[in-house]
Image (cartoon, rainbow, N blue to C red):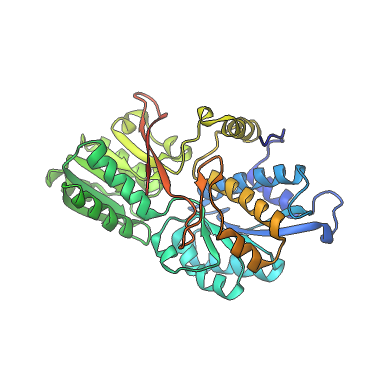
Length: 381
């Protein structure tokens, strides 16, 4: 069981502390890992979750002697909400650190832009963006530490049809490399289940009004909506449904179900919402999970997030790998390919031929009158 008493800190304080050399360690005693992630801008919320999870794992690992016999030093670079900035942040990490391993962004569009540079750099990396377009690349240097969007679409559609028994499904989605493939995949699953897709409506990530799309789906006779979105835009969809008095149950993607997003939504706007999350984080899952939840909350004064916590597990996977094979990049890559049944706090990790390491999702409803998720079941690919 991994436990440690840690001091609370602000996000910017964490970055500053981790960039600075730990204690009196010399450069020879320090192992540098680069983390391009969103520290500012639209994506900063999820970036903060990754920062907290990685920093938490690093503090624990260093307290236990570090990685491959060295203290671990994390260097964060801000990717903001720009693909070009994400690429430049990755190149800066490669140039300045020449690290044996890199954690990448949580956003598919940024990772797609960065992926060619990963091939050139030949540095193994983990990422949390869910877009299937990433694993289609079959980049041997990249490993995904959360469920891919095809699995999320499968879970959303299976729960709407088989789980809730709905027959006329409307799909609303953000128009990008995350939302569009997810919507297409969900449509196929709905039809395979013998249900009907009565409409598919898209919106831009920057849109502030999806009322026309929602009205179309209502007029088409939808008895359930599948919403494939990020947190902010998904929360807006739910608010609009309430304002428009559209009384249709919604099955929504994981970006809205995480604590940071749910806390922006009124309980009455969540009354008819079911959704998926990357993991079921609860003390009843076992002593390791219970300890992680308690110690994380002691440090940060908030509950751990199922999305961000995959980076915590990823950090422990890479520690296990580098403790075994050292810091040679090719050996790290090859060892990551063999990961099987690694039991993390979020999921059990096993690497498939596409570099996907997670193969299940948890489905939740919301406790009436609250923002609290209630576990329903796990859906496995």
